[in-house]
Length: 229
Image (cartoon, rainbow, N blue to C red; front, side):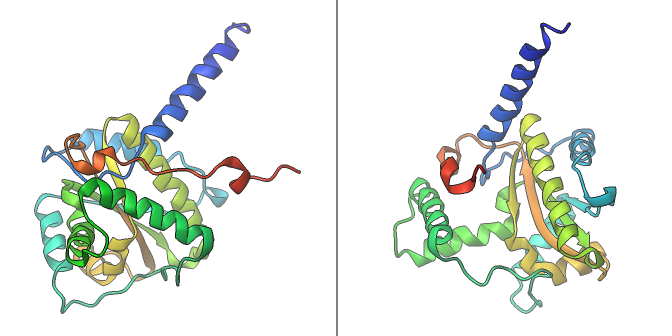
């Protein structure tokens, strides 16, 4: 048993690394709905994410079918109040701006959107509020009273959800943009005002023929993100 343990550990590390590396932000989905039992299994797996004092601050509202469609219709209504519960970054500078631009142009190149084509880029951005055609979306919220650490804990849950969904053969994309429609989400899904909407996770079976399926964003070299002391 002891001699086989290193091989078992290496195999597990390789499997987990493979899932993390192959996951991408999916922007094209097949219409097939995901069975409820599989969705429950993914949420159950994500619940093993750690949280401070095990408070597990995340709450998940999964929308599908008519409810999903009603949300997308309301998102498009310009007269409805907008604004995120948690303020978005004021801006991006330096290396963070560079990384953002690089990933954006990778996507636009795959979609055939040329620089300066504001109509096409706006149309693509609007697909955020259609969940990119995914049949399901998970709206993630946290208890406001838990502050930044509740948000951090939910970030761990979101990563666990994305990873578990990828391992199950699903496509996902975490969408902060949907949180800008938080008033609609609170009203339509009866999310209490004591909770802050953080993001949506659109998910479903990925469409391998969608042009965005070719996009693989870069990752920074280790010397940019880690210091050994």
